[in-house]
Image (cartoon, rainbow, N blue to C red; front, side, top):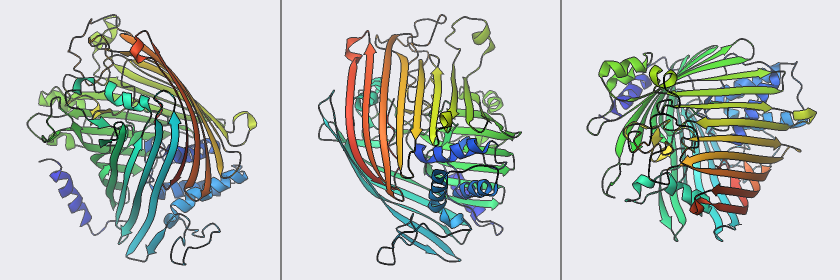
Length: 566
């Protein structure tokens, strides 16, 4: 049956005569979303109907947040703050009451009448925004003595039809050469699939190899949105989602490839309830090139509650399931049932996960956040056996400090992430927390800890400096036994012991990297990037040792900076 049911549901809602206006979503972009995040922290209180824990955000909601901040006379704003707010407003200008653009010359009178749009059409029945996409990177890397390069070109299209149906399309054609450690990552995480070589790139789908180590791939995302009633937004299409306030997410990140999904978001003031049903892929071992990739499914609930002035709590539940024969189980379409009950009711061995996330903004300078992911809770494993293999969980804790030490527009962030061995894994590839060979949570998968430090400084309106320092330790399954690092393997496959397990067991690999980037915005969404990167990987297993130093220079237009540091 696949997702025909989803399409039927969407069609039924589309014909509702009382459908109301809705908006598209601002694409996931760490730099862009940080500007929104720091405004929430500096304000010192949460906006009642704006929930920062589930991304992406609706463009209409971003404008609503900016309007509420401008109306709050108690919040001091400097010149750079006003520039950033105007930048965010112009990016979604169709939802702003003030549609006066920044001063900018028009191109041939018909193009760039608005800073964010190459071309737009707007009338009472139709709204269209068209923008080109370009990305060029040139550089070098010492460890492989390869030239690093990337070239991409494409188009982004969004709009509304009859003020009832929203649509979004993004497509780029990309060729390039990534660093050696990125190429090695795709091999290390797929060690059980080496009998059928398939190159995957974080955040992308199938990638073709060119010129020995180069890659060629098409990125395509698209969806439609509409509101059957004011409080409910429906989104159906192909994209990624992110849950949390951190640099990483232990619940659901944007590290994997885009996937087909239906998302229902119910907004009731301080409460936001998100249902996500997704069609994912399990690239089965030994698959022939002409053989279809197996399908698997995810059903996810997330309830976000803005409690009090500056504290929010999120409750997360997910079920990952699939069958070698059979499609989507209709029982999981129930938007308000406890999935663990359904799993027992169906007599299935599906993968159930529970979690929560919190956010606390205080002193108008700090934002504390945390996540906890519990994978298949069993009381006997957690409390009866020390170091049990069944004690599977992921944890995150982080702190953001804006305008640090009284320096305007200097923002600091520190974050701890960890996952015990065997977390996110399951008996079968149909049930592990993986989509198209990439983890759905943290890029290091399981059996690791990681500490992240980030500094962001915007000394002038258009110049931003980013510094990232990361230290991590992960235990690998180099000796062939299953030490819990490889979530692609069954947790019943050659597990050395049932108790005495600890983070970093197996063959430990310690990684340290430092990344410095400078980005200058020449005009709206046109950036020049300069980057210097050092990465050191150390292990007792000599073949895993690697030192990398690289420097790149790039130009990008209407596309996020490609984050690939791990």
